[in-house]
Image (cartoon, rainbow, N blue to C red; front, side, top):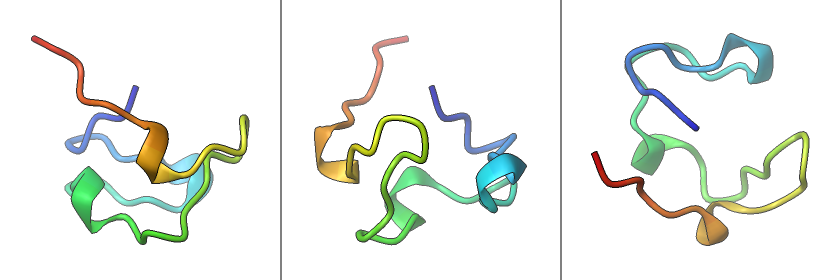
Length: 43
């Protein structure tokens, strides 16, 4: 789960970066999935 307020410094994504602002060529370093397979979670 990605939290924009926290970011993910393990994969060089700084806090306050929205998911939409992560480059389209990004892939999950653990599972190898691209952004196109991620879906927003309901709150």
